[in-house]
Length: 117
Length: 115
Image (cartoon, rainbow over all chains, first blue to last red; front, side, top):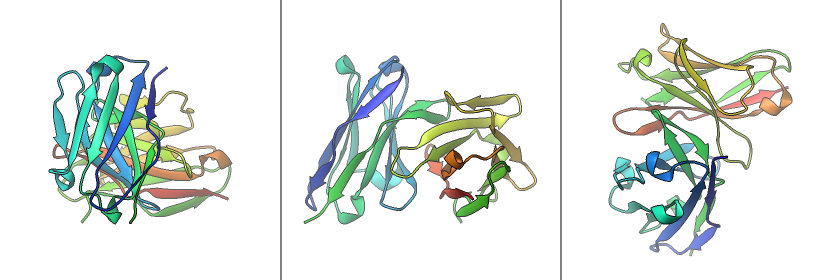
């Protein structure tokens, strides 16, 4: 069965960077996009970007361009996101989700990133 | 004006039907979009419910009951998620999403209360 398993919660200081992993199984990792979506406490879902693991192509939401990057290790079917220059407004649960036709289906369990001095 | 607008809340009784709407901004034609719906229960990740393009082009997520169905209201320029035979377990936040201008866009979500 398809699974996306994310790394554990992180606490970071303002100005730092965070890297979150998303290990996939149950399908061909190279063939379907991985998207990253975040959700601030009590708020809605916000899309951050997509990556095609097979060729490394990426697309970023305009809001995050410049301080957000996505990478992957195809040998272990794992995708990564890194967000830099963290501020308190980046405190959120970060999700990876598998891309399908013009949308997404399976989601990781989420990774809470807390930014606090 | 937001790209996708959802009512912030909706209440319905057990056994009744709930109609959740997702209005597209004026100038964005609902007919050309595939609309995705997600259910999110408190403290849990979103769960894919279904996507709807047309009556002949709808896909449901794994294990999603037949009580969930999608449609469009072209006069209102909106996507619709209908949940029939409401159960207490359907109480959750529901989000719609489209791929628009090379980005995914979510609606603000509707909190469905079953009471």
